[in-house]
Amino acid sequence: YHLMKMAAGRLVRRQFSTFVSSISLLLLVHNVVSFQGGEPQSYSSLRKSLCQYCVETVTELQKIIAANRTFEDFKDVFILGCITTIELTGDKGYIMCPGLVSSYGPVLQYVLSERFIDPNIVCADLHVCPKYDQNPLSPEEQDKIFFRKFKSILDSLVHNIPVKVEQTVTNGKVMKKGYDVPDWVMERTAKKDLNSKPFQSDTIKLLHFGDIHLDHYYEQGSPTDCGLYICCRSSFSGKGSAGYYGDYSCDIPHSTLDLFLSEINSLSPSPDITIYTGDNPPHDIWMESYDGQVNATQYLVHYISEAWKNKTIYPAIGNHESYPQSQYYALKWKYQELTQSLSVIWQKWLSLDGDQQTTVKRGGYYTTLVKGYPKLRILALNTDYGYAANFYTFLNEMDPYYLWHNEWVLATLKAAKKAEEKVILIGHIPPCDTSSRGTFGEFILNISKNYNDIIVAILMAHTHKDQFNLVKDDDGVYEVVLISPSVTTFVDVNPSFRLLELDPDTYELVDYHQFNLNITHANELHEKGERPVWGLSYSAKEMYSLTDMSPKSWDNLAERMRSNTSLVDMYHYNRYGRSKDKYKKCGDVCRHDTLCEINNVISDKMYQCYL
Image 1 (cartoon, rainbow, N blue to C red):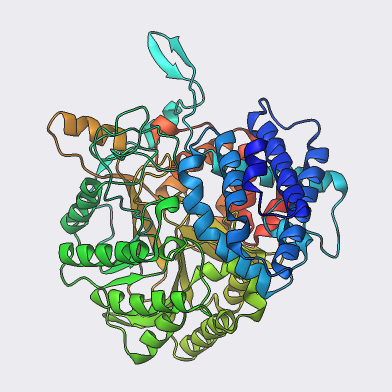
Image 2: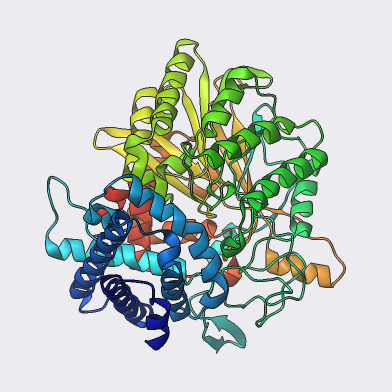
C-alpha cells in the first residue's frame, strides 16, 4: 500500500482512488484465477463488480486526459498496477510491465483523447461488461456470457503456466490424466511420410502457412519455465531445458525454420502457389521496438526468398508486424511508415505494380492475379481493422483509411465478378477469434453472401490452431474460413503447414492435407543424431468424411459434430497440431463452445451461443 502511495505521489487524490479501485478489481481477478472446480456461485456479483470498476477506471482516465495531464503523469502508477496484475498469475511482472506500459500507455491515451467513448461501450468491447442490443439478455444470461468471456481472457493470460498433470499406472503403463489420446485417434491419425504423394496428379497445389514467430535468441538448454510470456533464452532464469527444435512454451529457433524451409523444398510435386498469412516477430512483447518489428519482417522475407529461390509468395500483414504489436492506425505517420516499408520488403516475394504498391502503402492490403493463373485473384486484407486488441479500432468510425479499406474490398470483388475471375481471400485474423470485433464478422458475412459465387477460399491463421469457421446466417451457409495452424510451437502446439488442392478448371477447393512436426519426437531424434521429418497428419476429406470441400459439406460436418462426440474429440486433437504431450480431452463444455466457434462468424453471436 505504501509503495502504491509513493508511486501515486504526483497524482491527485481522485486519481489515486481510481488506482486503488483498479487494485481491488485485480484482487477479484485473482479470486477467479485461484478458483478451482468450475463456475463460482457468485459470478453474478463478480461480473457486476468488474464491470463497475472497469467503467469507473475508464471514466477517471477520461477525466485525467480532459485535465490535460500526460501519460508520464500516471505512467509509474500503471506500471505498478500491471506488475500486480501479472504477478497474481505467478509471472514476472516487474520484468515485463515497464516495457508493456511504455508501449501501450500512449496508445490508450491517444485513443481516449481523440474521441469520447462511453465507458460502458469500452468495457463491453473488452468483454468485461455485457453488450446490450435491441433485445437485451436477461441478467442470468449476461452472467453466463460474462463468465465464459472472462474465463477465456484469464486462460489466455495464464496460458504459458505449466499444467500439473496427475499420473496413474494402468497395466504397467504410465497414463497422464486429461492428456491421454484415445486409441482410435492414434489409429486413424498414423503418420505418413511427407512424400507419400497423397495428392491428385492434376490439381493445383497451394501451400498455406502462417505465424512463424522466429526467435533469434532461442537457445538450446535454456529455461522453458521462466515466468515470462515466452522462455527459452539464456538471459532468462527458470526451470526446464529447451530442446534443439523447440519447446511448447516458446517460439521457434532457427533450426526449426530451416527444417521447415528444407521440407518444402523437398516436396514433390512442388507447390504451385504459396500463401503466407503473417506474424514474423517473437512474442517478447515487453521488449519490442519499431525497428525490431520491421527488421523481423525484413529478415524473414529475405531469408525465405534465399531458401526458396524464384518462388512467388503472397503475404498478408499480421498483427505482430506493427509496434506495439496489434496496434494499427494509418492516420499516424509511424504506421504509414510501416506499410511503406512493407511495400518495399514484399517485393522480394512478388512484383507489385503501381496500384498495388499504393494500397500496400496506404493500408497494408493489395490484390493481384496469381502468377500463371490469369483468372485466379488473391485479395489480401488488413485484418488489424477488425481486431478489438487493436485499441485504435475504437476510432474506426472516424478513420477514413478503415472506410477506404472496406470500400476497396467491395470494389475489388465487384470488378472480379465482372471479369469472371475467382478469388482467394487471405488475411491474418479470422472473424471467429475471441478478440475480433463483431463488425468484422458482419463484413465477412456481407461479402460472402454477395460474392460466394466467386470466392473459392478464405484462408487465415493467427489462432495458432487448426480450425474452421462457417460464414452463415439463418438463410444459409455461404463460405468457410479455413484457419491454418502455426509454424511456431507457441503455445502448446506442434509446428504445422497446410497443402491445399484446387481444381485446375474451376479453382474450387478439392481437398487439403495437414502436416506437422512432433516437437517432442524431433528433439529426441536430434539427441540420437537423427534428422526428423514432417508427417502428414490427415487429409480433410478423408478425416472428416466430407463429400467435397464446399461450405455445405463443412456445415454438414458441424451438424454431425452435434451428436458425435468422438468427431469433436478428433477435431479438438487436430486443433492443437496433434500435440500428444499437451492434448486435453474435450468435455461437454468444450464441445459446446467448439460448436459455437465453428458456427458463428460474428463474435458477439458466438458469445451468446455460449449460453
